[in-house]
Length: 143
Image (cartoon, rainbow, N blue to C red; front, side):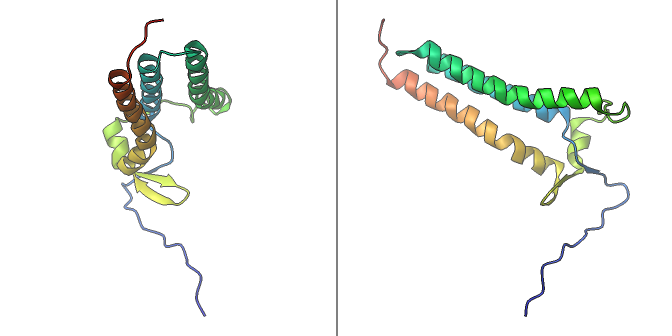
């Protein structure tokens, strides 16, 4: 007979805080990487038939991807208590040194930021590399 797995509580020192909110730098980084991705698509894949329609749809998709969290944040700012909506006074370095709470357990702030930013950074950098290869490898046509 097996015993069910039990959650083990880790004792944190009294001075070690556990964060459950992201630092504003993380949100700005997500927006910047999204803009980088859209610009790389616009710069390197701007030729061919229906290019205007294609680039417009890609831009609208990423506008929606960025707009949904921004609208949620603005709604929260408008409806939350004043003491909850204050700006974060600590630096990113201080914030990253704290633990970050997730549903599956705690992470260090640095690990949480890396796991959050890695997917969008990989896509933005990868699309830029694909775009460079496409730009230099596929012959240009004058139309």
